[in-house]
Structure formats: C-alpha cells, structure tokens
Image 1: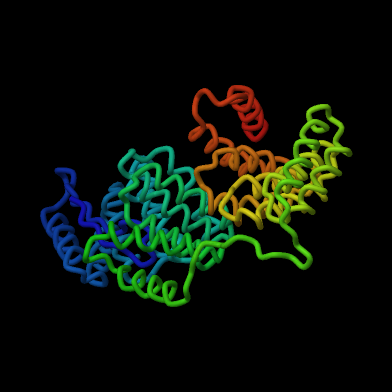
Image 2: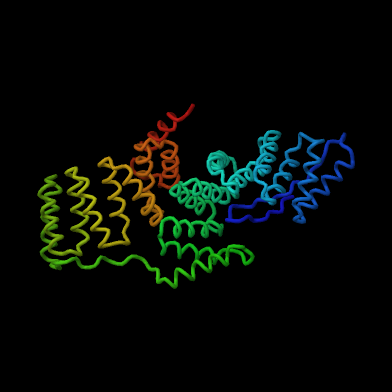
Length: 396
C-alpha cells in the first residue's frame, strides 16, 4: 500500500507506507506496534511513527519495509541523516527494495548530498519500470543541477519528456532551469505555460508557476529579433547574389581562399544576407581558419536568430579548432536548451566531452544520441562502435 506525498521541488513521490507482515514467531504485540506505526505515518504524525518503528527495529532486523517506513518518517521530520541510514539498512536487507532505493536518492537531494545522489540515481535509472522513468529522471536532473551539472540536468529533463510527455513536473522543473540558469526567458515561458495546462489543481507549485509566468509576461519577453543594421550597412541583393554564385563555384572547386573573398564581398553588398554569412563560415572552415569561421557563423546567427545551424556550426568550428570549452558552452547553454530536437547536438557534445576527457558524460550524451537518432542516420553504426569502444575503456 503506497500513499505518496509530494515533497518540495517536485522531485517525485517520497512518502510511501509499506504494510508489514511478520514471521509467525513474532509476538502479537510487535505486530500491533507496527500497525500503530503505519497508522501514525499515514496520519502524518511522523515523530510518533519514527518512535514506534525505531522501537520495533530493536526486535526486528530483517525487514526492509520496516526500515523503509522508518526512513520515510525521518525524512518528513527533516532528519535526513537518520533517513539515509534507515533506507540504507533496508537495502542491505533487500537490495531489490526499489522504494527504499528511490527514496534514498530523494533524501540525499534534500540533504544537499548531491555528489552522492547523482551516482545513486544514475545507477537506479536502468532498474525502474517504464511508468516510473519520468519521475526518476526528474529526480536525477535535480541532483545534477544541485551538483552544478546544469547541462546534464537539461538533458535528463529532455529524457523525461520523451519518457512521459504528460508528466507535469518536468515542465515546471525545465522552466526553472531555463529561466534561472540559462536565462532563456522565452523558452521558460513556454514551459511554465505547458506546466499549468497539465498540472492537477492541487499541485503545490501552481502558484509559483503562475507568479513566474506573470513576471515573464510583464517583462515583455519575446523571441530574439533580427539583427539591426550595422554602421555603414548596405542592401544590394543583386550584387550579393552574383558574388555568392561566384563563391559557390570556387567552393565547389575547393578554392577556399577565393570563395571566402567572394562571400565576404556578398556580405558587404548585403549585410542581411544569411546565405553570404553562412557560406563565408563554410569557406573559412574549409581553409581550417576556425576562429574566423566562428565570427562568420555568429553573423549568420545575428541575421537569423531562430535558426540552429549558425550556433551548431560555431560549436563545430570551435571543436575543430580544439577550443573544446567554447564548443561545450555553445552546446550546453544555447544549442541544446533552445533546439533540443536537433539531434546532431548530442553527437557533437559526446565528442566534445571525450576531448575534454570527461568520459562518463561523453557516454551519457552519446547514448542519448543513439536513442533519438533515426535508424537511417548516416554514420550511426560507426558512432555506435566508437561509443562502445569508449564505454569499454571505462569499465573496471
């Protein structure tokens, strides 16, 4: 029998009651004591429940549900260290006791022990049933966020969306992350709106979501607009188009220096030519001039801020130029949060993390890429082999 009560931060359900049945040799008064403790726990009298279960634990040392209930009582009292000890005792008795496994992770988060909560919940994730996956992913995301891994928190929320698009807490948690950490206010607005459409009326975070949404709307948040005209900017689309065609001919022949000159001339003729800016980046990339390529892609992104390609290509050029930190920042703080459906982001992120020697994170991103990439994606099997080899190097 599980009566779940939500805890702060929309982590997941965290207060179950496990009804116990004792071996035949146990005295009736012991069973009556435990029944009384379960009643106190269900009634919300956690201090009384903790006293009763602690007293029973002196006579019973082989019942995982007993220690689970004791841990639940301590958790609600804010005695997180004691709760952790109780849940750990339950798992020593029964390593397959999933309620204790899950609530141990939740309690570690509440205690601020994120360095312990993250590996615990990562290890738990493959064990949970499909219907529980979104809840555990939210807990893991919150743990990652607390540990300072905001990019992995974002990825876990995205995985929670895939696991269960109707699970309301994911939208609230993702909205908070986008707003508070990434300052992506338009995207945060969308998530708070989606949360309010899906959350049940009794959800305790509805008031917070409404308040956040009201502030965002009052601030006039909107999607980024097009670039403003630079000093001396001109618009001669005909001349620009002619120069682009010239550049394309040089680019096809791999005459990258000449192509760059032509595309630069096109952009000078029409400062709002996205095609000229993006092609200028291509030509500079072809010439392995990655620093200047990034500048061209930045200009393309200023002209068309709603497009993912300029951001992704900046990150790719930074990676190619061995500027791995810059590539990682572009992907984790902008490309992935704003364009989560652009699957190439995850493959490149795996390569970036590998180059940074952050192998466990490379594997997480790489596995996500394999999960979301269509089976007909070119190079998918080669990437799978690369990831398998990388995973093998991390095994003890």
